[in-house]
Length: 247
Image 1 (cartoon, rainbow, N blue to C red):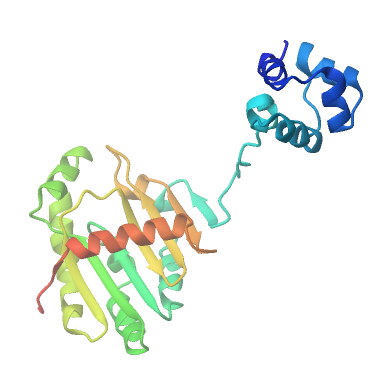
Image 2 (cartoon, helix red, strand yellow; image 1 turned 135 degrees about the vertical axis):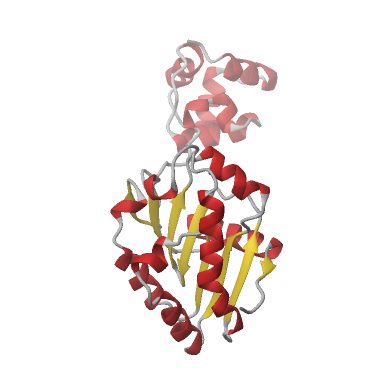
């Protein structure tokens, strides 16, 4: 297919095959093939020709436009689990135990942690005593979004009751230095379990309980990645959350 954009640019500047070929240092027949057959020159040659004609190189030869290479997998993705139920609770516990600077949890209830690991509060107290900032955000059982989630997951009032149970578990920590506990009333798209630069992200799928939804394990590798996206999400929810009074 002829390159009419190139033909028009040459005509506008009074360029012939021979004169442009001389300027670009190629054979005139090459210029002719560029125009009449729509051939694409090498990038370096095309850049010189476009500059000579006063045109954008990608406008003359769109094929030279380089798409941003796609990555099959994010460099921050450590593991992907089909469902949360596949992950041993020890994986969460080990991650929290290794935290040195911060622990952040954003959930509706996640009582599976306390049920499977009764020492969770002791672990969080120990981390806080060592200087780790601990922030826990759980769902407000009276919020419209929590109640709607129960309907969406066909769990009835189960979500609300589990939020109240989670509040019962975490409330004693509200008076511990270095630990903050809040309730939030947001629509929860993902549960977030963060320990320093490691995080478990539990997706939420309409009609599926969290234990049956996928989880991706992330490790922060730099600014602006997937990890930071979820960290920013936690921070935004935290700002809207209500502090829990001491129990």
